[in-house]
Image 1 (tube, rainbow, N blue to C red):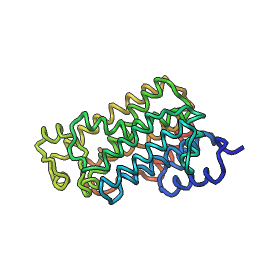
Image 2: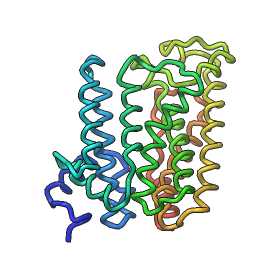
Image 3: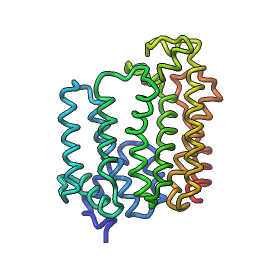
Length: 283
């Protein structure tokens, strides 16, 4: 019997998307049993495809139909319809782990936020909504695939998703600025006297203070996620603990640099990544 009872060709196609992305996600999900692992590969494949649509170098009016087509595909899963490898494996995952349609649609809505005009200095409510859609919604799908569908697991997704996305925002300030985007909140920029200008943020002397305030937000969400994890199935939360520890280490690295040289990637040394994997992935 194949994982999820899916066709071998579909499983291979979905796994190839994950491998081809060149991220640590592929290795991180190896801690899961085959059914859950391939459900996560399919969730990742879905997210990768809609993210690529949002990031494509095409006009917004061309992206909307492509995103709408995926809304249709997701709705089709609840009609037992699937038209390609990712959706065929997702169909099995939806049926096995009771994944929720609303969470898939939230992810697409988040990608559409990025597909239109560049996000520049959002208000705090918009930033929180963005983090919920592009990260916490993925978490809500993931915790069910991990093996915990409790309210506490949804709380983990709520907080850990926000913590991870805020860390991504801090890590990618320079990269985002090069694309005309600035996800640091308007209120923090205004209080520090920083203009809402992606091109100017890297050279502004107050950028460190703004980044430090966003880091405080991220730490609060990491702490709340850890507290919620203690009320969850410990084995099911292994991947969540691993992701949380990895991103907390990245955030700590950024803080130690004092928010200087934001254009240099904050990569973790191989030994530190191995230690995190051993400590949290095998616990």
